[in-house]
Image (tube, rainbow, N blue to C red; front, side, top):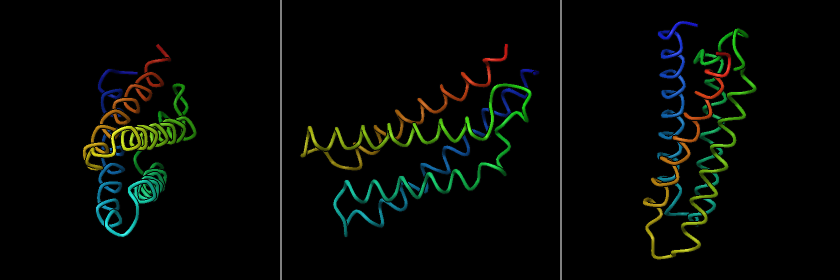
Length: 128
């Protein structure tokens, strides 16, 4: 696979992930005043995962069977990243209750986004 195609796949995956982060942030901002931070975060992450899984067929981040990446592989990466995201968020809030939830959310989102990108690149580059 040419370097240009791999780059295009990665940028589409990154755009899909950013859409998920945006959906997560917007829904969390709507829910955090009415619900506890833990429940609001769980619901916003679930909505973000559903949005990303819905957009997955149209994002064309899979390689059409030419490499070891498939819809199931990308869905697994996204699901693990969301679980990591919530785990980090909940741990930070539980360990330091004085920490602002948005700060914990930012740290958890950036970390899980890095994990997702690394995992996706690992799949894409595995065929070489």
